Image (cartoon, rainbow, N blue to C red; front, side):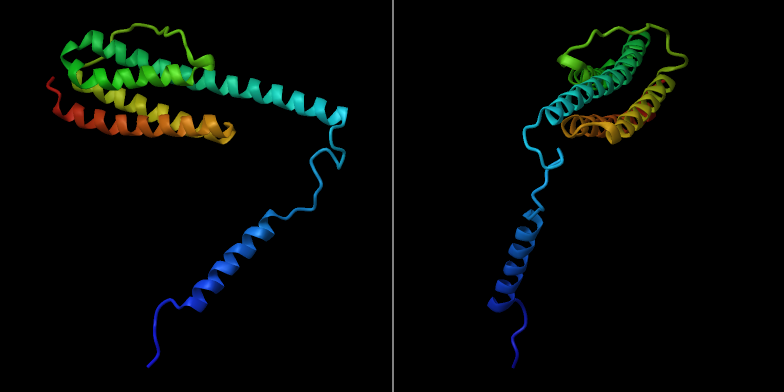
Length: 179
């Protein structure tokens, strides 16, 4: 009668294969990006200019993403001003969007300037328009992930996911909102 399942021999073989893979993945040819010259002045200058351009690119991405969220925050403010009856459902979402603007803004703070306009239509239509705005914001933040450095990409992914969740909640709220 043969035993089925994992044996000690199989487990040791698998562990050895994983360890060998890790060792081989860590091995390199020893050459670095500066053409084999460690600590050379041209390589250091190139690294400094690359770093400065990366900071400028991240700042630009942050400004753009914060602008998208600030525009959405303006929509929330407009709907809340025009339809105060929706405040119970919209206030927590608006506060989350305000936190997103502050987190995305370069330097951790942003001026919250937006245009106050009267949203068209009844409260359910205004809430549906907010849901559409959240979907656009989610798409914009998701598209920005391609060019973002890792830390900003994680933040953008989180904000995009929150915008998608807000969109769902707003769609459901629009169904429950009375005209």
